Amino acid sequence: MEFTEEQLKRYSRHIILPEVGGKGQKKISEAKVLLVGAGGLGCPVGYYLAAAGVGTIAIVDNDKVELSNLQRQIAHSVKTLDMHKADSAKQTFEALNPDVNVIAVKERLHSKNILALFKDYDIIVDGTDNFPTRYLINDACVMLKKPLVSGAILRFEGQVTTILPGDGPCYRCLFEEPPPAGLVPSCQEAGVLGVLPGVIGALQATEVLKLIIGKGKPLKGNLLIYDALGVNFRKVKIPKNEDCPICGKNPSIKELTDLSEEYCSI
Amino acid sequence: MEDIKIDKKLDIRGQVCPYTLVRSKLGVESIEVGQVIEILLDYPEAADSIPKAMLNYGHSVLKVEKINPGEWIVQVRKEVED
Image (cartoon, rainbow over all chains, first blue to last red; front, side, top):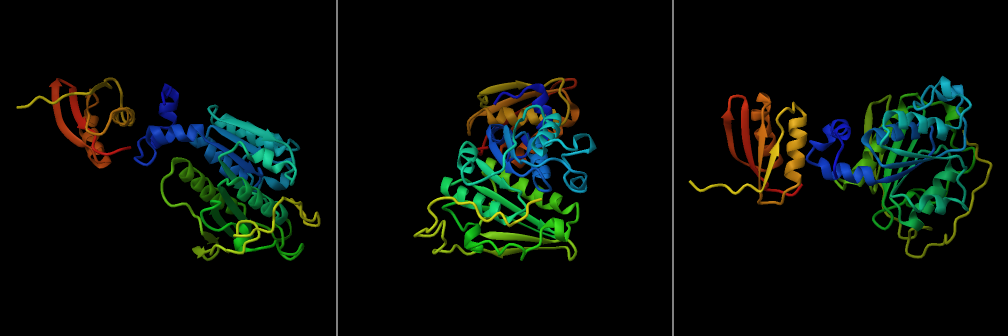
């Protein structure tokens, strides 16, 4: 890759890393990453991926920026209140790095549009806040064999895992079905420390960059759990379930369906 | 003494840290394992830091020589893939 003077300066700290170098930076600039959600997690993930020079970043989010988002959703501001989060984040990421092509997708993900939206991207990042979408994303990634970097946060605790379909477990291997609606509280009901998505989102962005440059060990087969109050990182092994309904030997899920709308989404 | 065959020459005079290293690293990436690059530089600190960095990357430093007042050449043989 021929770098412009500006790129050489911008990416100098990457280029001098033996694991990245000019070749790794070229891979980063050619990568296409799709973020589901421009909320607590999507903001820091997108921010760091844009800074790193990821060539194409798509942001799927149909919500608009509200004042209550600004305690943690760092790509938005008082100037972008009421704007679509996808547009607000696009504006922020492009201001940080004009090399990056940011595509704002102002749609709600569902079983009918998800495969078409995902198919052109190399890596999918889950930054959603509800179980139906989380399972839908998992199932779509398994069907399309797309790497998925999943993150979740609540109160003072967050978790991250990387799913490589065909090479380790998926989200349904861990929990076959989503919990019943109302059992697990949402951030809206239970709260979340504003900085927590920053920690978890930065870990997700790290996983994405490692996958792009092909260095290090991906967090597959493990759930990394961060407890902010106790200051603990725990890595819990996730076994692959041979009877998994989506990635097992005889999958029972053959097509995508939308789960109940009873779940709230923020 | 046997002359070293130089496969590529890189002139980074006028460059300062860390761009001396950035350009040297990209220079080494552009040659094959076993080939030799000769880097011409005039930033005094780089005469010391570039050879060290190249050794850290796993390459061999064949020569560091002050050729003129304030100008050095560093010859590096690429030993490992990037």
